[in-house]
Length: 325
Image 1 (cartoon, helix red, strand yellow):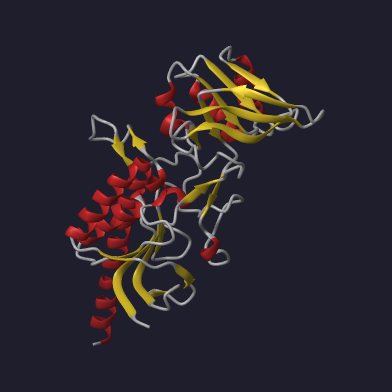
Image 2 (tube, rainbow, N blue to C red):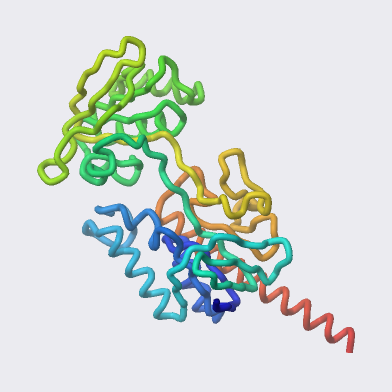
Protein backbone atom coordinates (compact mmCIF):
# COMPACT_ATOMS: atom_id res chain seq x y z
CA UNK A 1 0.00 0.00 0.00
CA UNK A 2 1.28 3.43 -1.00
CA UNK A 3 0.12 6.83 0.21
CA UNK A 4 0.02 9.54 -2.45
CA UNK A 5 -0.08 13.11 -1.18
CA UNK A 6 -0.87 16.18 -3.25
CA UNK A 7 -2.21 19.69 -2.94
CA UNK A 8 -4.96 18.90 -5.46
CA UNK A 9 -6.53 15.46 -5.73
CA UNK A 10 -8.77 14.93 -8.76
CA UNK A 11 -11.10 11.94 -9.03
CA UNK A 12 -12.11 11.34 -12.64
CA UNK A 13 -10.33 11.80 -15.94
CA UNK A 14 -12.72 13.20 -18.52
CA UNK A 15 -12.61 16.73 -19.99
CA UNK A 16 -13.51 18.21 -16.59
CA UNK A 17 -10.86 16.31 -14.66
CA UNK A 18 -8.02 16.94 -17.09
CA UNK A 19 -8.95 20.61 -17.53
CA UNK A 20 -8.83 21.02 -13.76
CA UNK A 21 -5.47 19.22 -13.79
CA UNK A 22 -4.03 21.50 -16.48
CA UNK A 23 -4.96 24.65 -14.58
CA UNK A 24 -3.99 23.16 -11.23
CA UNK A 25 -0.58 22.06 -12.49
CA UNK A 26 0.11 25.47 -14.01
CA UNK A 27 -0.67 26.96 -10.59
CA UNK A 28 1.97 24.72 -8.99
CA UNK A 29 -0.46 22.42 -7.17
CA UNK A 30 1.09 19.23 -8.65
CA UNK A 31 -2.28 17.51 -9.04
CA UNK A 32 -2.88 13.80 -9.00
CA UNK A 33 -5.62 12.45 -11.28
CA UNK A 34 -7.09 9.08 -10.29
CA UNK A 35 -8.53 7.91 -13.59
CA UNK A 36 -11.36 5.62 -12.52
CA UNK A 37 -13.16 2.79 -14.31
CA UNK A 38 -13.40 4.66 -17.61
CA UNK A 39 -10.20 6.65 -18.18
CA UNK A 40 -11.00 9.59 -20.39
CA UNK A 41 -14.71 9.57 -19.57
CA UNK A 42 -17.54 9.27 -22.06
CA UNK A 43 -15.47 10.71 -24.91
CA UNK A 44 -13.49 7.47 -25.03
CA UNK A 45 -16.64 5.73 -26.35
CA UNK A 46 -17.51 8.60 -28.70
CA UNK A 47 -16.19 8.27 -32.22
CA UNK A 48 -16.71 11.43 -34.29
CA UNK A 49 -16.49 14.78 -32.46
CA UNK A 50 -17.34 17.76 -34.62
CA UNK A 51 -18.30 20.46 -32.10
CA UNK A 52 -15.23 20.86 -29.89
CA UNK A 53 -13.78 24.36 -30.44
CA UNK A 54 -10.50 24.64 -32.29
CA UNK A 55 -10.89 21.76 -34.74
CA UNK A 56 -12.26 22.36 -38.23
CA UNK A 57 -12.29 18.67 -39.12
CA UNK A 58 -13.98 15.79 -37.35
CA UNK A 59 -11.80 14.40 -34.55
CA UNK A 60 -12.03 11.21 -32.55
CA UNK A 61 -13.11 11.28 -28.91
CA UNK A 62 -10.39 8.91 -27.65
CA UNK A 63 -7.72 10.96 -29.44
CA UNK A 64 -9.00 14.18 -27.86
CA UNK A 65 -8.77 12.65 -24.39
CA UNK A 66 -5.26 11.34 -25.06
CA UNK A 67 -4.22 14.87 -26.01
CA UNK A 68 -5.81 16.33 -22.86
CA UNK A 69 -4.03 13.77 -20.70
CA UNK A 70 -0.71 14.42 -22.44
CA UNK A 71 -1.08 18.17 -21.95
CA UNK A 72 -1.96 17.74 -18.27
CA UNK A 73 1.04 15.48 -17.69
CA UNK A 74 3.32 17.81 -19.65
CA UNK A 75 2.61 20.67 -17.22
CA UNK A 76 3.07 18.56 -14.10
CA UNK A 77 0.06 16.33 -13.49
CA UNK A 78 0.54 12.82 -12.20
CA UNK A 79 -2.01 10.34 -13.61
CA UNK A 80 -2.69 7.10 -11.75
CA UNK A 81 -4.72 4.24 -13.11
CA UNK A 82 -6.82 3.29 -10.11
CA UNK A 83 -10.45 3.49 -9.01
CA UNK A 84 -11.42 5.26 -5.80
CA UNK A 85 -13.69 3.00 -3.75
CA UNK A 86 -14.14 5.14 -0.64
CA UNK A 87 -13.60 8.73 0.38
CA UNK A 88 -13.83 10.58 3.69
CA UNK A 89 -14.96 14.19 3.48
CA UNK A 90 -15.88 14.57 7.15
CA UNK A 91 -12.45 15.21 8.65
CA UNK A 92 -10.79 17.31 5.96
CA UNK A 93 -9.10 19.16 4.63
CA UNK A 94 -6.92 17.32 3.83
CA UNK A 95 -9.26 14.74 2.30
CA UNK A 96 -8.50 11.04 2.17
CA UNK A 97 -9.54 8.54 -0.50
CA UNK A 98 -8.78 4.84 -0.88
CA UNK A 99 -8.31 3.14 -4.23
CA UNK A 100 -9.27 -0.33 -5.35
CA UNK A 101 -5.53 -1.05 -5.37
CA UNK A 102 -5.34 -0.36 -1.64
CA UNK A 103 -3.38 2.85 -2.20
CA UNK A 104 -4.35 5.93 -0.21
CA UNK A 105 -4.75 9.35 -1.81
CA UNK A 106 -4.56 12.52 0.30
CA UNK A 107 -5.32 15.95 -1.10
CA UNK A 108 -5.46 19.38 0.49
CA UNK A 109 -8.34 20.06 -1.90
CA UNK A 110 -10.53 17.57 -3.73
CA UNK A 111 -11.94 17.99 -7.23
CA UNK A 112 -14.72 15.56 -8.15
CA UNK A 113 -14.99 14.92 -11.89
CA UNK A 114 -16.52 11.44 -11.91
CA UNK A 115 -19.05 12.29 -14.64
CA UNK A 116 -22.33 10.64 -15.52
CA UNK A 117 -23.35 7.77 -17.72
CA UNK A 118 -26.26 7.65 -20.14
CA UNK A 119 -28.85 5.04 -19.26
CA UNK A 120 -29.28 2.42 -21.96
CA UNK A 121 -32.08 0.03 -22.82
CA UNK A 122 -29.86 -3.03 -22.62
CA UNK A 123 -31.34 -4.74 -25.69
CA UNK A 124 -29.54 -6.60 -28.50
CA UNK A 125 -27.76 -4.47 -31.07
CA UNK A 126 -27.62 -1.38 -28.87
CA UNK A 127 -23.94 -1.50 -27.96
CA UNK A 128 -22.84 -3.09 -31.23
CA UNK A 129 -24.40 -0.22 -33.21
CA UNK A 130 -23.24 2.51 -30.83
CA UNK A 131 -21.74 5.29 -32.94
CA UNK A 132 -23.10 3.57 -36.06
CA UNK A 133 -26.65 4.86 -35.87
CA UNK A 134 -27.31 4.52 -32.14
CA UNK A 135 -26.52 7.42 -29.80
CA UNK A 136 -27.49 8.82 -26.42
CA UNK A 137 -26.80 12.48 -27.20
CA UNK A 138 -28.68 14.43 -29.87
CA UNK A 139 -26.71 17.62 -29.33
CA UNK A 140 -23.49 15.65 -29.78
CA UNK A 141 -24.45 13.58 -32.80
CA UNK A 142 -27.59 15.07 -34.34
CA UNK A 143 -25.60 16.99 -36.94
CA UNK A 144 -24.52 13.71 -38.56
CA UNK A 145 -28.16 12.87 -39.32
CA UNK A 146 -29.17 16.03 -41.14
CA UNK A 147 -31.85 15.25 -43.70
CA UNK A 148 -32.28 11.69 -42.41
CA UNK A 149 -35.12 9.87 -40.68
CA UNK A 150 -34.45 9.50 -36.96
CA UNK A 151 -36.16 8.29 -33.79
CA UNK A 152 -35.93 9.23 -30.14
CA UNK A 153 -36.71 6.60 -27.50
CA UNK A 154 -38.15 7.77 -24.18
CA UNK A 155 -40.95 9.79 -22.64
CA UNK A 156 -39.47 12.26 -20.18
CA UNK A 157 -38.03 15.76 -20.48
CA UNK A 158 -34.79 14.48 -21.98
CA UNK A 159 -36.55 12.59 -24.76
CA UNK A 160 -38.83 15.49 -25.71
CA UNK A 161 -35.95 17.98 -25.64
CA UNK A 162 -33.86 15.66 -27.83
CA UNK A 163 -36.73 15.27 -30.32
CA UNK A 164 -37.25 19.03 -30.52
CA UNK A 165 -33.53 19.60 -31.01
CA UNK A 166 -33.29 17.03 -33.79
CA UNK A 167 -35.84 18.94 -35.89
CA UNK A 168 -32.99 21.40 -36.54
CA UNK A 169 -31.39 18.66 -38.62
CA UNK A 170 -34.08 16.16 -39.58
CA UNK A 171 -37.47 16.68 -41.28
CA UNK A 172 -38.74 13.34 -39.92
CA UNK A 173 -38.41 12.71 -36.18
CA UNK A 174 -40.40 9.99 -34.42
CA UNK A 175 -40.66 9.78 -30.64
CA UNK A 176 -41.18 6.20 -29.49
CA UNK A 177 -42.65 5.70 -26.02
CA UNK A 178 -43.69 2.52 -24.27
CA UNK A 179 -46.73 4.15 -22.67
CA UNK A 180 -49.69 6.18 -23.94
CA UNK A 181 -48.70 9.47 -22.29
CA UNK A 182 -45.49 11.39 -21.74
CA UNK A 183 -43.84 12.15 -18.41
CA UNK A 184 -42.31 15.42 -19.59
CA UNK A 185 -43.39 18.90 -18.55
CA UNK A 186 -46.58 20.11 -20.24
CA UNK A 187 -44.90 23.05 -21.95
CA UNK A 188 -42.48 20.63 -23.64
CA UNK A 189 -45.34 18.36 -24.66
CA UNK A 190 -47.15 21.31 -26.21
CA UNK A 191 -44.07 22.22 -28.25
CA UNK A 192 -43.63 18.61 -29.32
CA UNK A 193 -47.22 18.18 -30.54
CA UNK A 194 -47.12 21.56 -32.30
CA UNK A 195 -44.03 20.67 -34.31
CA UNK A 196 -44.96 19.28 -37.75
CA UNK A 197 -41.63 17.47 -38.04
CA UNK A 198 -42.34 15.23 -35.05
CA UNK A 199 -44.67 12.25 -34.79
CA UNK A 200 -45.24 10.02 -31.77
CA UNK A 201 -45.45 6.23 -31.75
CA UNK A 202 -47.28 5.26 -28.57
CA UNK A 203 -47.22 1.98 -26.64
CA UNK A 204 -44.12 0.56 -28.29
CA UNK A 205 -41.21 -1.23 -26.65
CA UNK A 206 -37.86 -1.46 -28.42
CA UNK A 207 -36.69 -5.09 -28.41
CA UNK A 208 -33.73 -4.89 -30.77
CA UNK A 209 -31.68 -2.49 -32.87
CA UNK A 210 -31.40 -3.80 -36.43
CA UNK A 211 -28.47 -3.44 -38.80
CA UNK A 212 -24.88 -4.45 -39.41
CA UNK A 213 -22.18 -2.44 -37.58
CA UNK A 214 -19.70 -3.37 -40.32
CA UNK A 215 -21.93 -2.56 -43.28
CA UNK A 216 -24.08 0.55 -43.15
CA UNK A 217 -24.94 0.59 -39.46
CA UNK A 218 -28.46 0.95 -38.10
CA UNK A 219 -31.36 0.19 -40.43
CA UNK A 220 -34.30 -0.02 -38.04
CA UNK A 221 -35.86 -1.17 -34.78
CA UNK A 222 -37.73 -4.29 -33.76
CA UNK A 223 -40.76 -3.19 -31.72
CA UNK A 224 -43.51 -4.76 -29.65
CA UNK A 225 -46.89 -3.15 -29.02
CA UNK A 226 -47.20 -3.04 -25.21
CA UNK A 227 -51.00 -3.29 -25.43
CA UNK A 228 -51.61 -5.93 -28.11
CA UNK A 229 -48.24 -7.71 -28.09
CA UNK A 230 -47.97 -7.31 -31.87
CA UNK A 231 -44.41 -7.29 -33.24
CA UNK A 232 -43.30 -4.86 -35.94
CA UNK A 233 -40.24 -3.24 -37.46
CA UNK A 234 -39.60 0.47 -37.90
CA UNK A 235 -37.07 1.69 -40.45
CA UNK A 236 -34.75 4.49 -39.36
CA UNK A 237 -31.23 5.75 -39.97
CA UNK A 238 -30.59 7.11 -36.48
CA UNK A 239 -31.85 6.21 -33.00
CA UNK A 240 -31.31 8.32 -29.90
CA UNK A 241 -31.83 6.62 -26.54
CA UNK A 242 -33.08 9.31 -24.16
CA UNK A 243 -34.09 7.67 -20.91
CA UNK A 244 -31.90 9.78 -18.65
CA UNK A 245 -28.42 9.87 -17.16
CA UNK A 246 -26.99 8.54 -13.92
CA UNK A 247 -24.30 10.67 -12.23
CA UNK A 248 -21.41 8.76 -10.65
CA UNK A 249 -21.97 10.05 -7.13
CA UNK A 250 -22.44 6.89 -5.08
CA UNK A 251 -19.10 7.51 -3.30
CA UNK A 252 -20.28 10.84 -1.95
CA UNK A 253 -23.83 10.08 -0.81
CA UNK A 254 -24.41 11.24 2.74
CA UNK A 255 -21.33 13.48 2.56
CA UNK A 256 -22.30 16.05 -0.10
CA UNK A 257 -25.54 17.82 -0.92
CA UNK A 258 -27.23 16.35 -4.00
CA UNK A 259 -30.41 16.99 -5.93
CA UNK A 260 -33.21 14.47 -6.45
CA UNK A 261 -31.40 13.01 -9.46
CA UNK A 262 -28.19 12.39 -7.52
CA UNK A 263 -26.22 15.25 -9.08
CA UNK A 264 -23.87 17.11 -6.73
CA UNK A 265 -25.27 20.50 -5.80
CA UNK A 266 -22.90 23.44 -6.03
CA UNK A 267 -23.11 27.06 -5.04
CA UNK A 268 -24.82 28.77 -8.02
CA UNK A 269 -22.35 29.83 -10.68
CA UNK A 270 -19.45 28.01 -9.03
CA UNK A 271 -18.07 24.47 -8.60
CA UNK A 272 -18.11 24.85 -4.79
CA UNK A 273 -19.89 22.06 -2.92
CA UNK A 274 -21.30 22.36 0.60
CA UNK A 275 -17.98 21.03 1.99
CA UNK A 276 -15.21 23.68 1.97
CA UNK A 277 -12.28 22.54 -0.11
CA UNK A 278 -14.34 20.09 -2.20
CA UNK A 279 -15.24 21.11 -5.75
CA UNK A 280 -17.34 19.34 -8.39
CA UNK A 281 -17.13 19.82 -12.14
CA UNK A 282 -18.43 18.34 -15.35
CA UNK A 283 -21.42 16.04 -15.78
CA UNK A 284 -21.39 14.98 -12.13
CA UNK A 285 -22.87 18.39 -11.26
CA UNK A 286 -24.49 19.33 -14.59
CA UNK A 287 -27.79 17.64 -15.50
CA UNK A 288 -28.55 20.19 -18.23
CA UNK A 289 -25.74 20.74 -20.76
CA UNK A 290 -23.60 17.59 -20.59
CA UNK A 291 -21.09 18.68 -23.25
CA UNK A 292 -17.33 18.17 -23.33
CA UNK A 293 -16.73 21.90 -23.68
CA UNK A 294 -18.93 22.82 -20.70
CA UNK A 295 -17.30 20.08 -18.63
CA UNK A 296 -13.88 21.48 -19.50
CA UNK A 297 -15.04 24.96 -18.52
CA UNK A 298 -16.23 23.86 -15.10
CA UNK A 299 -12.96 21.96 -14.64
CA UNK A 300 -11.11 25.22 -15.15
CA UNK A 301 -13.42 26.92 -12.64
CA UNK A 302 -12.80 24.17 -10.08
CA UNK A 303 -9.03 24.55 -10.35
CA UNK A 304 -9.16 28.35 -10.04
CA UNK A 305 -11.45 28.19 -7.02
CA UNK A 306 -9.30 25.46 -5.45
CA UNK A 307 -6.23 27.66 -5.86
CA UNK A 308 -8.03 30.58 -4.19
CA UNK A 309 -9.21 28.31 -1.37
CA UNK A 310 -5.67 27.17 -0.62
CA UNK A 311 -4.27 30.69 -0.81
CA UNK A 312 -6.91 32.05 1.58
CA UNK A 313 -6.38 29.12 3.96
CA UNK A 314 -2.62 29.60 3.99
CA UNK A 315 -3.01 33.34 4.55
CA UNK A 316 -5.35 32.72 7.49
CA UNK A 317 -2.91 30.22 9.01
CA UNK A 318 0.00 32.63 8.66
CA UNK A 319 -2.07 35.38 10.28
CA UNK A 320 -2.96 33.10 13.17
CA UNK A 321 0.69 32.15 13.65
CA UNK A 322 1.68 35.83 13.65
CA UNK A 323 -0.93 36.63 16.29
CA UNK A 324 0.18 33.64 18.38
CA UNK A 325 3.79 34.74 18.18
